[in-house]
Image 1 (cartoon, rainbow, N blue to C red):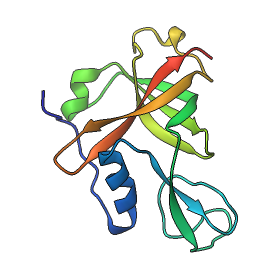
Image 2 (cartoon, helix red, strand yellow):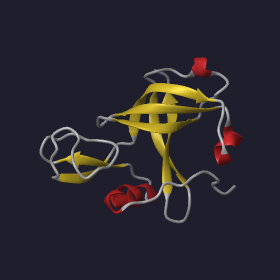
Image 3 (cartoon, rainbow, N blue to C red):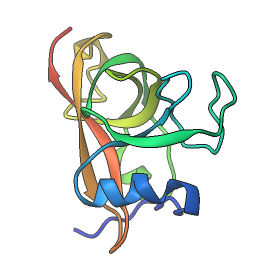
Length: 139
């Protein structure tokens, strides 16, 4: 089945992220001055305001920080309700929002804060692979 959800636009400053995603790698911006990894990509470190940044390959691992069950949606997402959105605490630091895979939106009691997750990528179009996170073990 073709991907039928919105595909994020690619920008020049996010090219390393999208290139990595196409290769199944989670690329993250890291500040060379303070050492902080940050998400979402930007041209300045949100912690020390340096512009001395580089891209690193992340582990693709993290933990569920919090989640919410979405019961209403439009477009392609309407076919998936109820689905679960979550914030993931990346092992490298900072936090990423996602749609959580491998969970049942009808059974939120089975989703555990702190559960380990791993990134996976779904092809949105020829050039864009979108990261989603899947539960790999209980908290």
